[in-house]
Amino acid sequence: MPPNAIDLRCGRVSEIGRIYLITTVTLDRVRLFEDLILARTTIAHLRHADAHGHSKTLAWVLMPDHLHWLVQLAAGDLSRLVAGFKAGSAASINRILQTPGQRRWQTGFHDHALRTEEDLPAIARYVIANPLRARLVTSVRAYPHWDAVWL
Image 1 (spheres, one colour):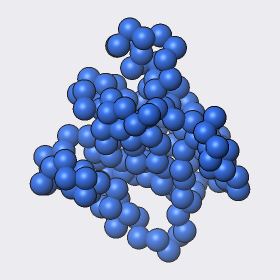
Image 2 (spheres, helix red, strand yellow):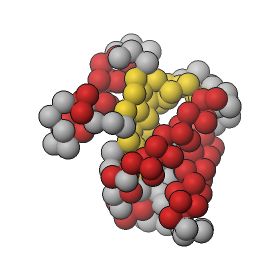
Image 3 (cartoon, helix red, strand yellow):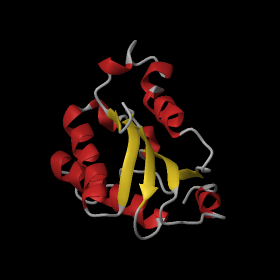
Image 4 (cartoon, rainbow, N blue to C red):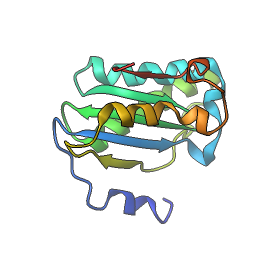
């Protein structure tokens, strides 16, 4: 485990109904999601968490080597939600690439619990503008791996 991975868990509190901004990174920052099939498979796991009542996704962007996910926790705890997403998406990626058991995500994740006064649509715009800031595209519309309930 990287020396700072355990620090990411210190003080983490999960509250049902709370909205969190999650960031998680691929192992060694491998650019897995430049592959359309791997990206779409991973996105399906975000939707799976919502469909099973664990979360309500408000906005997300899947970058080539990481994910930003604005999500409301609906059940369970945040660590289990993220762990379930990472395990499921890694298993699917490994099935596609025929690499059983290979780790695909770095240990841990970064989370920010939003306060009620924070402007959610503005945060969603910030999240989905990541491809612009990374200079992957010149328009958000040109980037295929994002969504937000407000847009």
